[in-house]
Each structure stands twice: as structure tokens, then as C-alpha cells.
Image (cartoon, one colour):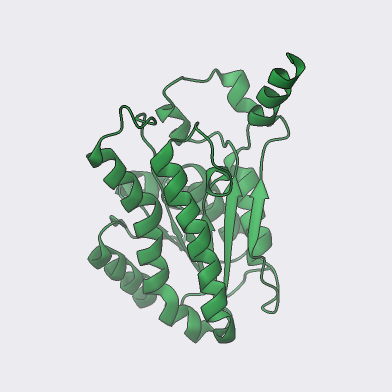
Length: 252
């Protein structure tokens, strides 16, 4: 018997990285899983890795109408919704004010703040009906600490996502809904390919791996309904930001 037997989970950004790893571990724990992202083929690959029962629901989550249609497809297939993992996100190489364009800024805010807002808003009625609904938002270390690596738009959007998660707990705890925001440091996912400076494999091997974050999300999902884990901050042991600070301090 799995810890999540009978539960229905909807994972966004499920075609790769943290989303794919999370969908797999939730399914292994017994949940029936719906998978959403922009592209059908990566979602279908995740579904094949899970096995029978995974639902593929492609959607552009920056479009509220597509969010609502995807939610309706999940409810039509499974009849209920218990867990939402709002993981879809985006970054871009333009990470300095001097080179940032309005188009890039708009795209990052749409993907990293507006899309998870639409997902949460769309899912609230079904999560209230479940009696013990859970939303897990995948934010970032950049959502808790302001720094230059991720760029100003990404930092601002992820800070907004952290705040949004806490407001859900403030307003919805009386309805049995729990919201958790996970703030991982560097994770070895395809988004790393968008870094202006490419990192070698040995550096990426010391980062968090998608399965590490997925296991943290699984832990949150397996808590009893009276337990709300509001926030998780997680980083690699070899935290490159800390190591750089120590190196500068050693130089006087």
C-alpha cells in the first residue's frame, strides 16, 4: 500500500527536471498523476516512465483559458483533485538590467508568477472539495534571497510566488487547504542550459538533482491533513554562493 493511494495529483512542468521527477515519485507512492506542460512529447515520455494511468494534458499555463481547460480535463478523468505541484517555470540568458528586454521580462513574469497564480486560482474549488487539498509551489533560492545570478525578473517573480503561497495559507487554512513553497538552490535541470556561463558536468553533479527536490515534495504530500509545511529552503551542501563569499572573505 502506498502513502498516497487514492490521491489525485496534478503536476505542471512535468516534461523534465523537477516536475518529471516529482510526478514519478508521487505515482510510486500510489497517486494517480496528471501531467501538464507546453509540449506533448516530453509529457508522453514522463507518462511512459510512470506506466499505466498517467494522464497527459498539454497546456500553456500563461493562458488562463488553457489552465481552466486543463483543470477540467483532470477532473473529468479522475473526478477529484487532492495535490497540485505547480512547478512550471522559465528563465532566460538576459539577466542584467543593461540587456533585459521588455519582451523577456514579460515572458518571465508570465511563466514564474502569473501561471502559478492561475493554476492555484483554478484549483481552489476542487481542493476545497477534497477536504485536505495541498498545493506545492516550486519557487527558488532566488525567491528567498536577492542575488544577481538568476536575474532581476526571475528574482522578483519568485519572491512574488513565495508571498502568494503564504497568502493561500492565510485565507484557505479554514478550508483544509495547505500551501507549501519549495525554494531550491541550484538544481541540475535543463534550465541550467540557459545560464549565460555554461557550467561543466562536474559542477552540475554537485548541485541538487531533480530527485532530491522531488523527495522533499513527496515528504510534504505524505503529511497528515493537520500538518502544513509552509516553506522548505533546500540547497546543495557545496553551496557555490557561500563558497564564493568565503573565498572573498579569505582575501581580506
